[in-house]
Image 1 (cartoon, rainbow, N blue to C red):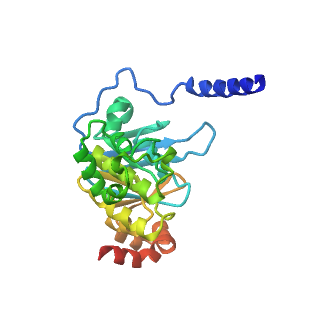
Image 2 (tube, one colour):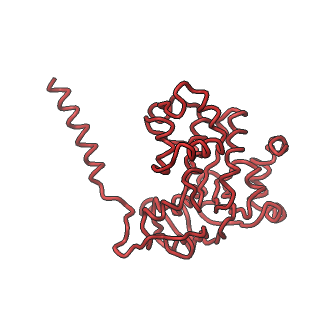
Image 3 (cartoon, rainbow, N blue to C red):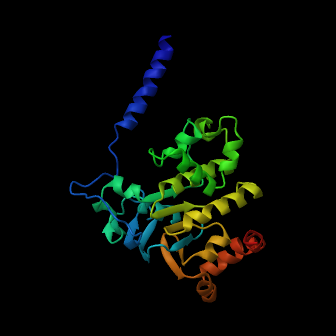
Length: 290
């Protein structure tokens, strides 16, 4: 018994040590709420490294995204795509330069107000050990049952939920283990639809899903793009072709910027990535467009 108590005490000491760590990102004393967001996003000579002495994950990156645009981030593994999205949502702060939303440095606005205008759908969806309804209401606790159904319907999820014995009261299990990968991702999409943010950050990877789930998710994403600024780490040719602009990152630098047609004409890194990663998807795009 003493051995178990000693082990438990050591475990709780480690947990409390983590909880006691000061947050890396906090509100400045004079931070003000971000209100009436249009959805413009800009990087102004942004440089960021995860630790002193490491090669910067982003280096001297500048670009401007207009409200309502769909922007695809493209580049090899480790190019800085996920880091760029993390800086927009202020999971980290850059060491140099500014990240701007509607012209406001995100370090000068409150974290709560910034987060209220940003919706995130990542490939690895986190769900709580709670009902589907509670997991959806995490985005908007005051949402009505009718609003839950509308969001789930837009995410092509309502029919599946309605087929469950407990419907929206179905408990999904720890990290949503009772749901398939495609079902969990559609819950995440419905959650963001319910939140209705002005800025959407999207890692749309679906390579680990079966064809049916992938097509349902692609259909569920369409209502998300409408009327909001979307920054997507693009894994699908359909997203690249639909993008208002494509930002091509390589080793932390913005090396190319333009539309699909413009970048193919340049014959640089994007053209190479298109040949290797995207061109084989053309039949899938044709099928989905029918």
